[in-house]
Image (cartoon, rainbow, N blue to C red):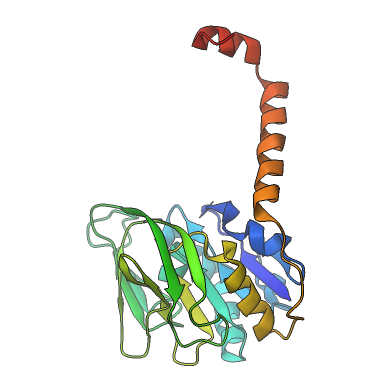
Length: 242
C-alpha cells in the first residue's frame, strides 16, 4: 500500500507515522511535490507548527490541487491535527494566533470549519472508532494525545470519527474516505492498522511490528548519539551523579 505523507515545511510530530512505516504491507514515504502523490493509495496530511502558513504552501505548490484531484478519484485522505484542520472548508484566525492571515480557504474535503482561539488543548486520550468509514474498523481502540489550537465545528455532511472519554473527536466525510482527527498516535493502534490493511485487501494474517521494541531501538540510538556528541562524564559531575 503506497502511503504518501505530505512533508509540510513546518511539519510537527514526525513520530505519528513510525508505526505505519514499520508495518509490513505499507510503503510510507514523505513527498514534497505534487508528482510524489501520483502513485498514492493513501494520502496523509500531518500536523504542523503553523497550520495556515503550511496550508498556503499546499495551495501555492500545487499539492492541494493534486490532493483534491486524487480524492475525487477515490483515493483516501487522512489528516492529523493541523492536517485535519486543512481538510475543512476554511480556517479562521480572528485573533492572529496562528498567523495574520485572517481566514483561509481549506481543501473542502471535509464539511468542517476551524477557528483559532486563545489557549491550547493538551490531553491524553483513549477511545474507539465510531465513524462510518470502511478505512477503519468500527470499535477499533485508539490511544494517544492531543496538542492543538483551534476549535473545529462539523457541518451536516460530516460525522465524528472517534468517541473518546473526553467526547467526540475528528470527522468523516459522507463517503467515508476522508478522515480527520486531532489524535496523535492514531496509527499506533494495531486495530487501526489492521483495518487499513483490510481495506486495501492485504492478508489478515500479515504480522504487526513490535512497536515497543522499535521505540527501545530508537532510544538506544539516541543515547549512543548523545554519548558520542557530549561530554557525558562532565554532565554527570555537574549533576552530582557518580
